[in-house]
Image (cartoon, rainbow, N blue to C red; front, side, top):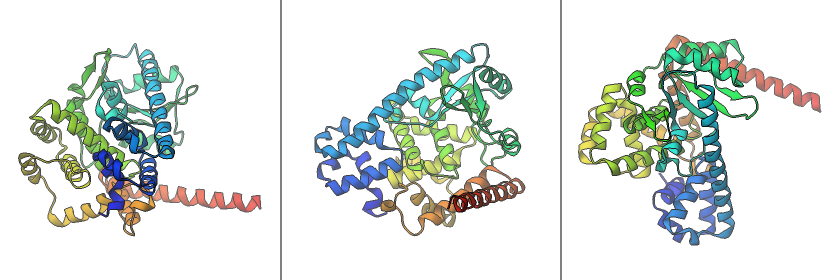
Length: 371
């Protein structure tokens, strides 16, 4: 990969580079960070590194604005979590916060500078109907009214359609599993839910265990079909692995054993491969040897490298080449293929294509009328 494609990653991994950056370099980094949803993290990393005085004033305004948004979102998260817990106070069973919300509530490094557009929770499948009903009483409504969308989520996916609050506008994703029910790579969600750990602030609220948090982050990223937040999610993994390793010298061994136990060896292989290739994460010899046992064949791996090194770059012209659109399209197909059997996939993608074409035709008709 060229230096231009890696400029944002270089600053985030080695913030001392800020001392040698020109205004033009900063312009590239800022637009890449904004596109990658990493502007808040960039502010945090540069601020903590002691190199903030090297940042031009006009650049610092962008970083400070991002930091303010992060602070507001984190404050709002605490309020929303209290509202959700209050709505579900009569529901027995575990309520597990996932992804960005979990990182912030746990006070993890992955939560620093982290923004999110919704809150994700995991509940036992047998409690799903009760959870949904209690939330509806509290003012949460489904964002998808279409019958096909409802069936798509409820029969095949690992979550129900997203809900939004009628007054506060917050979006909530309610998961009953960590991978789709029809997925070719399927996590043992029950085992991961059973191992969830309570928060000290409220024992009704939980997060996944450290190993499962990494596994879920890796699985979410490498089963994905759209990569608008791909680089941000890779940095989540980088922060999680780095922090958990610092707490436990045997973390890698425990993580790989857990991956084998819950059926997620392929996502964790891909996670370590691109953490190494894109963010230069150190991979100990023992870890690399264990990962090699579950590696795809060389040709398959070469194709994946071509696709993922582009998909996990900032989606800005400064970090893209002629193969980037093709790579994103092929990964879009791969993500759907991993999530759904072929007979469902053909119907689903055909329907999406028709809807996109219909919407385009309607928009063109409206534009013609406006003239």
